[in-house]
Image (cartoon, rainbow, N blue to C red):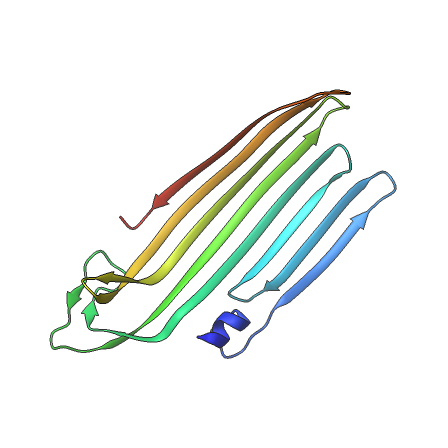
Length: 178
């Protein structure tokens, strides 16, 4: 479990891709591609492009997997479903307690001549796996299937000695297992 958390994979063979590529031309256009540990259970990547002082767009991806236990045992059938029933005859089966989060994002910024600017950022995150739940001092495997959508947006107006902005931040959480 510790090596899987530290190295970001539970495979016997680990491979990954890292990248940091930047481009900028004389007219102010720029782009970058960054990647860290792609191919591993925990990784991230980002692509960004735009023109300084005018606009920028970005895409991003991130995944994180954490392992609580790879040698837990349960005497219940139906692990990961809505119903747990004791096995008959009583038999203990291995279960992996781990959670995986995947996040995708998209953002954009736009700047006007000198008076205004605006932005919008959207993030979608999915969390799945099994975690432990305690009911009357009994530890049971509980399925996790959560979705969270976040959006941030705003407009800013500015002058020589003043600044005004209107911003919105919203979040929608959904438990897809209920």
